Length: 252
Image 1: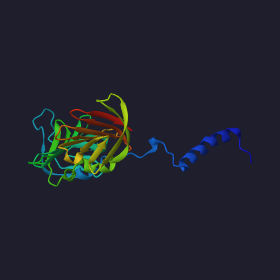
Image 2: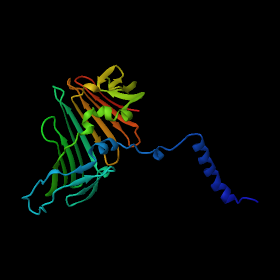
Image 3: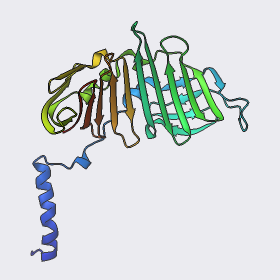
Image 4: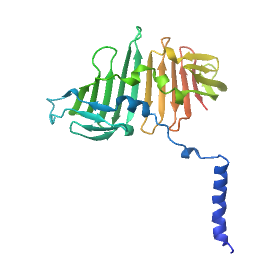
């Protein structure tokens, strides 16, 4: 049976595509997205029904909503008269502050449009979860341990952040691009001749964008900062090192 020239022309690029796949060549767009939300959801999922109160009971239009509020394992927030919201659709900022005495404070703030969900775990005092849209926002006491506060944010995301590669960096001291070695493992970050111990960070922030990029920001006691930005597939996008004398902006 003969094949028409048109069908033959269509089959050639298809065959080429299968050949590329067979050789292990894939498009970056086809790579699965990294689930940066997973550690957050594992910590905040549950039922919040302890000492729930309306945050703005005297505000105009307040409907008098209270708990309980339920955060499902996949991040859906329901209860207390709230319309269902999905944490996984929001941008989120995690902040972890280590006091000089070693005590740790942690906050999780997620928002989209006017909706806000937050979890506050101070070093001392009451842990509070807040949900909703003003004036119908509800807050409840967090009774159980806040798991994500038990380790550094670097340790939480080390599986994504750790890397060893070459980067092209622009240093403020040279004003020209230079290829350098970049390595992050066990919290020790090495870029060219610069070494930063992320385990000694006094303040860490992780920002997860709605487009699923992740930014990790570490502040050290000597005023140095390291900022690592990952794309949605868990690949390094940018690195910035900010110090008293030497600053660098790097990319793969």
